[in-house]
Length: 301
Image (cartoon, rainbow, N blue to C red; front, side, top):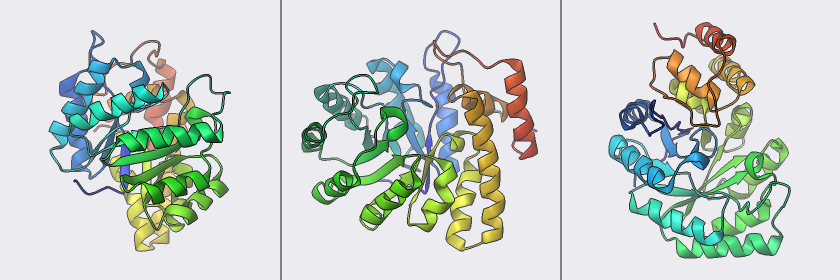
């Protein structure tokens, strides 16, 4: 299995003018991330527009990603979840067949975001899913998308009970809860944060790195933050982390994946079209992104 990376990208899914996955563009993007030493999550629900993909498209997305990365960096399946338990298992097993390095399992969200699963439902979900999978699994505590945090005690128990759990990704706005999770499991498995504003603190507390959309636009900047933190170079860390926060702010202001694809186009990457109902950003919004990219020295020459 390919060694894990400190920075992982929630990779965009490029579409062509006919609303088909643009495999040539995808290969360019995956190659760029691979050369930068950044791990790749494909089909994420957000940046990767995974919730808008057909099952056959998801399979092809994984295959192209695995073939292009060619073992240089790990490729992970992220279009899994927000449906019935049996369908999550079927999708995960199908993803494994494409050769991905691991599958990411979202917390269950069987209905509207306001309906939170009961503890016994969470227990049964993970027992069923992890009982069906023997290959590497990444758990995700995706508070932003599912509307509730997984109990730290549950995550800790799953890490202890299932050897195939090789990483935990957490996107939790509550930094205190992120710290609690790191205390509980960071010595036993890799933990990655999905909110880059938490990255410097999380690294100091034992996190392995980040899973973020900013890496699609500026992979070297993201890895520079991790490298400066590990080197104890506080001056360098202050500089590059501040730049990463600037990038995060402008991309968040106009909404991902719209903003990420616009920014990628501005730096010369073939991010492709959005899939409806998403629509392209307005000219003034693109200009706002371009101004920040120029300030950060990221614009295409």
